[in-house]
Amino acid sequence: MAIFFFSRKREIVFPIGRYLQVDVHSHILPGVDDGAKDTAAAIRLLRGMHQLGFHTVIGTPHVMVDIHRNNRATITAAYGRLEKALAGTSAPMPRIYYAAEHMLDEGFFGLLEAQETIPYHTSPYMLVETPYLFRPLNLEHLSFQLGTTGYKPILAHPERYHYLFGQPEAYEKLKELGFAFQLNALSLTGYYGKQEKTAALWLLEHGFVDYLATDIHHERHLKHLVNFRIPQNTIALLENTTFRNTELAAAYHPPKPAIPA
Ligand SMILES: [Fe+2]
Image (tube, rainbow, N blue to C red; front, side, top):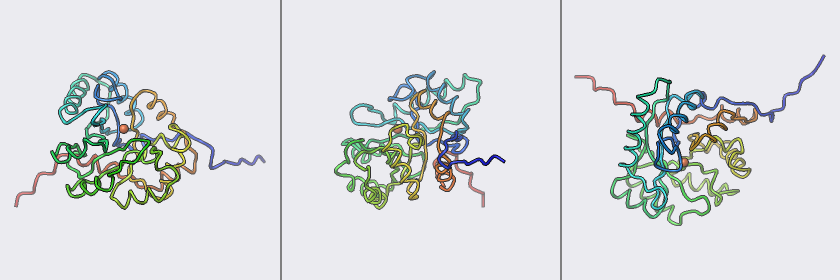
């Protein structure tokens, strides 16, 4: 009789879209950053995401003081262009919403003071990022300021910051400062590199991850999401983690009408 040994490290394709259903970090809004360059590209990505099983995709364009100088006007305009283009398609598509991915740069304070930041609609949550190579010096002050305004920061892809590699206490410190963590799914496949994968697994194993998202920018990301290969032990880690993606999508649903007295 043949005996088969199945390694827990054997990689299999995991249906990441059907598993998550809601994507809380994506660059599908057309022509506003380094994501989809026009509505046709956005629609191709969204069709692929629907086929993967996502029913809701929240577009989160970069808001930076230098490279991607977006604001509520540019983001709502891109959202409007995409909605209009989607109305002319017959293929099933995910629901789309928008928020933003705010760089914690020198422009961020001003946006916060002017109430120009773009959280996940009616929720207090806001997606933020830092440069990959260095930690902003004023991170403590920024998180304090965010707290005083009532916003709760979600740090995008903590596993991708070089200044955090191999520093568990630094991740703990960020958690203490009030940052929730959003992991990029492709980090688990090694798409961004070995150190990113190691950090992603460490964060998952330690229960530090609150949200899992695609951070999709282009067709290459889509191709890797279709062929999302991870080992059985990583699948077990995902299945033992409760991600809060659907909570953010709920912030976009219209409030229930009050019951008349
Ligand atoms: Fe992003």
